Image (cartoon, rainbow, N blue to C red; front, side):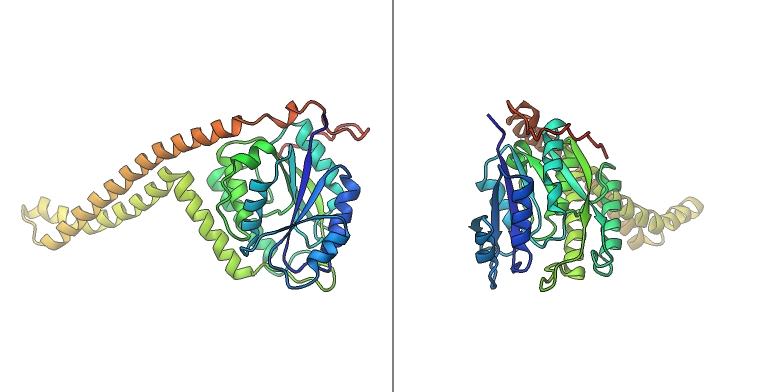
Length: 324
């Protein structure tokens, strides 16, 4: 039995681009089911996608994260490809990415963006992507070079064990951190990335979505690295307590008295708070460890992509695995 493949194309007002994306996916993966998830479009996105041969699904809750959450729950396939409907990614590389997933086997293959024209990135987006990627690499692991790529292929066990809590464009950050935290086998492959076609408008809001991504990174640090997060806060509080308390201790050693009693009480209170924050970090680290064990067991409840009886066969030699 051949493995099943599903392509998910989140769309909001992509009338000018979605038809080409669907046709390119159909040419690259003729056996795949192609789903266009319409996210409250007000133009002819649905009609154009249907004419191109896509299966239409509706997601009324606004945001790419909500679309991915819905698709991951509704669709069951051995491999699921997710690509933006704006025709900025090279959909013709879909076959290589799916082959790489099965031949690895990997749980995730990320299409890292290789800019093919000068209009691919809006002002500030390239720098922001590099900064966010650096932050995630520093906090969670170094196996990622394009954290915000919207072109990915997932195994069934990734899809069905991923919580998908994000609502909007921060979904890619959540996917990346999920894979890094569980040390899921991931590969990367360079894909072309170009500017939007005429008549298509980006839904990404540079500053608003940038702040949302930064907030998610901090929140994921609190959840996934509680010892580091709480140790940092406890260290800052303890440092302030030491700065306040040092003169009090010096006066006591010199005179045997405590002339600054309020300062002494404040310093002692802050040091106690620092100790409690540190203790909380240790407790949450134990909880996180148990939660991670449960996530790992849920992940292992599904077979690896390589266990599919018949791998994708195109007559070509397998695409070599490219570890990041």
